[in-house]
Image (cartoon, rainbow, N blue to C red; front, side, top):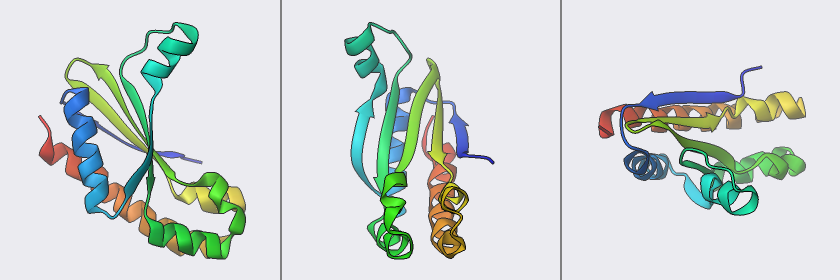
Length: 133
């Protein structure tokens, strides 16, 4: 099963991160959490990795519907979106495929919620290529 939706843009990490936040917001997602993985790994284990941030994105209307269908779905929320540098002017943005909710829970009632989340995340990812660089 595919678990990620991915796009790569020719832009700096910082620019891509800012534009990703905006694109998610325009699709109704708020960023509830932000983990600077590169800084955390450096502080905890001395590892040096390229800039890498995990955004915990949530569209409250979708979360409420999903929890109403499958109360334990909170274990899979929010939708993680990763922004990671792969070079000076190359950045990968990945989002967890919401269809994973259906596959993990085996609850077909989540299909409609997952489809809407997927459509909105796809739109946010597609917007990146026209806004950066």
